[in-house]
Length: 452
Image (tube, rainbow, N blue to C red; front, side, top):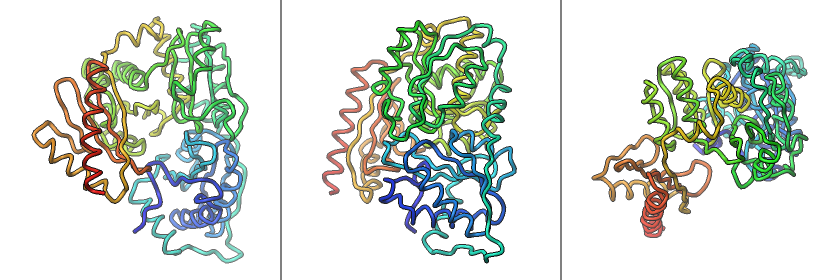
């Protein structure tokens, strides 16, 4: 069967491959899958979100299911509402960090988690076979506004933080919400935490005029400068749908996602020993910190939904990805930008240290990322040929091909959304990391060339 869902929902260019016809039929398939009851729907700030949200509404309502409209809120706010609000499921209209011409549709199960793959396959079956439930005119679903969840989500986050410890520090914070879905809720949370907050790109605008919505150092030069100019204690940046957060220290220096992940993992394990889940693409730095703190690490496949479900199944203490996506199970099983920001402020407050000091205490590794173009049809064969070439090494096949050396590794992993194979490397020096990535990329390129 043709696959519709990617790593994080269905995405495409709005009014092109992500059309109103697709959105309406996907709404019908989702409504059929969940059955009669109520489904929560929310969106980010993209220009096309109103169009697609209304198309999804129509599809869902035609099956006899009803809709609770949360409006424009962060993705984790919608997931919080589904978990606590008695909804059958949820739908988020978002393309997260993608450029403004893109949009997407992501589906949430009744527990607030992103759908498991087997559930996505059922929706895909309804979609491609057009096997939709069709309600008669008397049984059509209805739509209502459900605007309570912003406040309840804020309360939920504050209830999982040491609010008094943070308030005592009166942190000066610069927050960049990237003209995205966190524009209203995240400043409220930081203000309630007693922070002096300067907000950048705080107007909701689906064209992302401030900078592209992917929170990379290149896109966040303005935040770095603002931290330095205002003598702030911390810089915080969200992506477009506010489920990921990255940080800048008090000097305006970017904190790599692996470092904030490792720092938070160590802190969470001090509170409760247990398991930490992270993808195979994460730095060994995280494992070093987890083991030092008396915890256990489990590597999963890449993808936030997989990390979250593995955490739930294994009763993990903490988990997350190296891209700024952290998951706190005491709050909910999904990436949450505002919760991540609050927890890092808690770490700063209770440690009495600056962010730069905490980062300096972490193990040092260097990572390099490259990619090789490869048609989807050749990905599996290319990976097997690479596996044969490195069969004598210490190889992990959890997701792609991860080849371990002494204090170094290379990960070769086909992309789930693009016609490329990614090559990640890590080593104790930048030169060695660069060399490993370059060497393996050239070998992989030769394999792809032979296949094509």
